[in-house]
Amino acid sequence: QVQLVESGGGLVQAGGSLRLSCVASGRTFSSYSMGWFRQAPGKEREFVASISGSGSMTYAAGSVKGRYTISRDNAKNTVYLQMNSLKPEDTAVYYCAARPRVVPSTTPSEYNYWGQGTQVTVSS
Image (tube, helix red, strand yellow):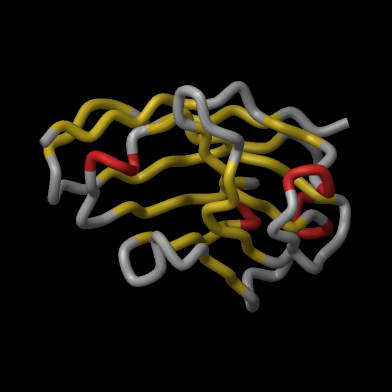
């Protein structure tokens, strides 16, 4: 069982930056690929970014590519999402997820564990 706790959300003006963190419980963190997803009101949960267990492979959705960076520190059991040049359309609840495979996925149903989410609000 893996427990995930996100932090770092908040209110920011358009063009600003935030860094989300997600701390995982357990001793085999590097065996899990990690993903960030987001869900805006009235919309389906969508893929944002993912990273392999070693951190050598990363993927990002087209809407955030070049603005968001996913990274991980396996010694700290933590995955990060650095978000720059934020836009109002980035407003959503952001979720961290873990998948018991070293190769990441962009599909929410392929992740077994989820955090409680952290709200990101970008004002115009």
